[in-house]
Length: 243
Image (tube, rainbow, N blue to C red; front, side, top):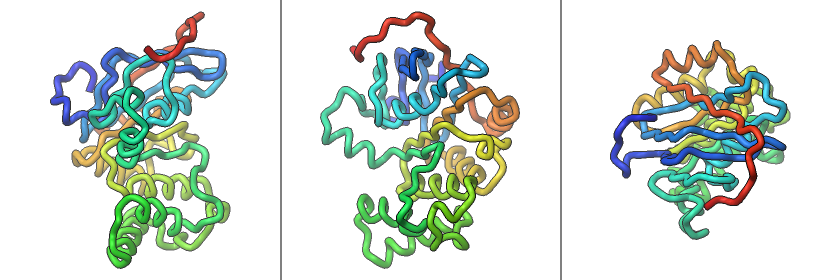
């Protein structure tokens, strides 16, 4: 984590010079940061109640989806915004991303939502693919809702399904975007339990991007060996392109 020496090839994320990104009319700054597999960080805005939720914009920059205003973002050893399109796409297959406000395909069941990324990226036999998906459904306690569509489930279950879909590919780097109150309820639930097991078992590096300060969740996170990092608003910052 920040301030700790790590082998370059073991890092899931490296922000050598920090990061600056835009969220609505504001510019935010993240301090220099490294996260290795087996580590996870919660990124919390220094301002208690931001006018515009900055966590969505930060999460997308850390997941290779939106280029930041400034800063070199190395994900799994790749300068993700300084590489060519083909390398970025290959690296994205090793990145898990959990949308804070949905993200499942609305016209597909939970089982089908998990099957799609496995079919596209894992190149397994039909039997192995089916076993992989069924194992994920069991692991995340989704068996009873496997044949339901997203609109037929409550928000907490949808979020757990999004997490299962992101982790079914065994990514080396995971980013969670814009958590709502039910996900920040001190980390209770099967989804968080499984994520703790993977993160602390050295199987993944992860960033949890919080939309606002939440002392209860932050305390729980620290109890589970997570590091909380504050990012701050930059008053009157001039906006420019990545250099």
